[in-house]
Image (cartoon, rainbow over all chains, first blue to last red; front, side):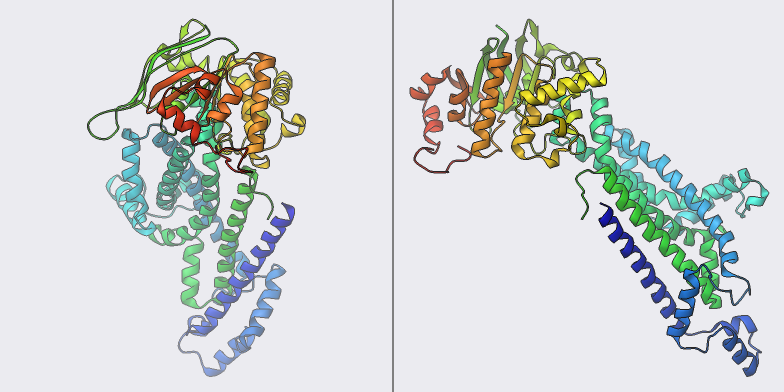
Length: 313
Length: 271
């Protein structure tokens, strides 16, 4: 098992490296230049040349990548062209906002989907099951941002449960969370629908297995057969799915942040791309990739812990 | 009489559009304590369905079970699901055809063997363990101590069937229903499992209702046999009589369809 995990960890580092190369290459290939957005249109040739020399933009791509990488691994994320401050400082405040939103989304997914999936499976073809089936189908097919606009319309404009204006943490934790629940919900709903569907199918699949018949033959009640036998096995794919979903939640946040005007990583990423502020873009891309890859690793780990049939490979 | 089954019928009411399907039709059987009785028939003859009905394992609302099965003075078929639970795993147990899938893949062997104990008796953990190990030894499992913490996938098919036997016997039921327990196993393992069942019957006095499509296997183990075809009993009697002087064409067919093991070397894994 240890060896297999080590191999996985190596693969993880390789993936991150590849992502950073691709992101770096992509931004040196696309047209546009940070000088225009930083110095303005009226900058003279000399000013532009001086700026390029100062930030090493006149060097070949591979040299720039190498100096970025060597600095990055030591924890130096570089300086923003546009804001002229360390990228780390710039990104950390935004990352906190996005992380809070992602965390709320994850909690919502778990709180919404686990009970619904259980009830739908337990009372198959019952009222709850039918309603849940229709709702999951609809919710799953709606993209994040449409969901966001819909929620915004319903809860902010029609029901007036919140004002469609970002409330920072400085205004109080309660108020902050109260606002953040709505964008988080926009991210959580489609994922919850998938989780419900997966859990329901997984439970029903396990309930039809031979070992459940064995459990009944020993005198288990339906409830204890469900608790002691079905759930553990049915949760294996669900837990794996949830761990991998964390990456999707982060990615989904980027879009939803735009809709709700949340100053998180996503907003920062999009503005930075517009400004051709490469150090910022590079840092955010690698960070997001690290979260996704890390969650896949976590999913793998959980899978091994939960299913004794998976041995080190 | 330990078990007395009268007119046991199992009817699927949701079979096709018009008429219900009768899987078991007025099945009757008497069994004494410690007796080993066989039920033979081809697949679809209703023999497994009979076993599942006796065991209270037919749970679908669309399937009706009628008749009576008086076990030690109680009609099992008249019991509610909750009342029947008190018998399952304690007074009667069952082992199945598929030892590969009949065990929970993520539960340790020991926990599965002692599960009936956990359900029916309040015992301290250590005592449960001792009794589980005892049942595992009775089922012919080597080194129960180390198997106790292993998982089903680490065991061979024959070993898994022995684990099933151990978990069925942990409370020493008076009746063990064996639903084609050796069909999925190869011939040598099959013979060893049969030997173990015989041994358990001798030592513990457990009555066995042995279900098989193989009259030869039944002959090796049982004193009496019931032959079933399309849900009905076509012939029954002492096993030697039925085997050597079959009255029904169907029974003769069952006997003749078995490959002669002595002539064909290594052939006929499934009889």
